[in-house]
Image 1 (cartoon, rainbow, N blue to C red):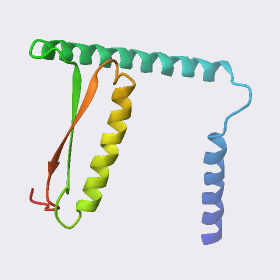
Image 2: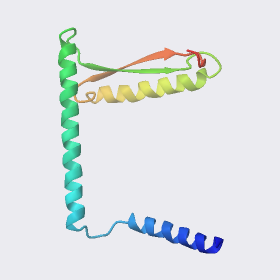
Image 3: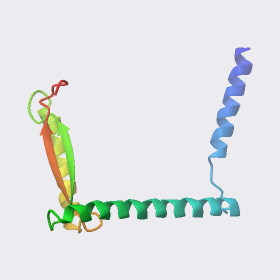
Image 4: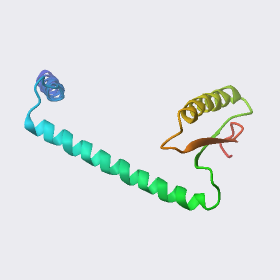
Length: 122
């Protein structure tokens, strides 16, 4: 019984992997699905951008600088400070590169950190 079950499971795995393969010539169904996915992604991106612009427009009344603020919390002091500081330094390097290239959709990115001192209660 175990051999039969093992053979059925192996066959099912092979069939599932074979179904994931791509063909060299896409058919019309694949092309249509790709177009729908691209259109949906484009629509989602444009609505997200519109939401960001609306939020930024509300924030522009308070300040003329356009920026997104990202926060991070981690161990900057305590036993695991090495790891927390490495994450902060990596994020700052990445955000500096992003801001040098014009930011994200014209918005500069600011990074704010919080220290939890490697304490789960904080």
